[in-house]
Length: 176
Image (cartoon, rainbow, N blue to C red; front, side, top):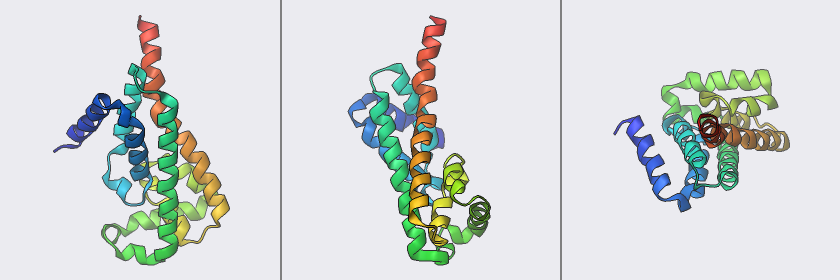
């Protein structure tokens, strides 16, 4: 099954089962923010598609936004905890052992930007997958991590869902 087919299936399932939208979005955002998993999961494209479903009506924006925010927050938090527990041994585990440059690039970014790397990294796919893990490995203090994590999760969830949710309505009003 291709990536496009996977995206279409999940968006179609969500359209047909809108009562599951909050759970689906929460799980996708969690996976999108969880170290390594986010490299394998096409959640960004799916969340953009679900944003368009919101715009087409039938799915309320704010509960879905909250679910995306919570999922993203907990995905980064778990990545941070994994980093604290495993430390640099994580580089020897699959799939990172095959791509250690991802970890090193994430470490360089973290060293340069500190707490801001948590916030900024959320908005860039490869960084989103690794920066919270690196923060844990480097034993970043919990409070600054949690603040950056929470604020970025709230804004990221809005940014990923709003174009479809509000863009569709804006286009309908403008065209019609």
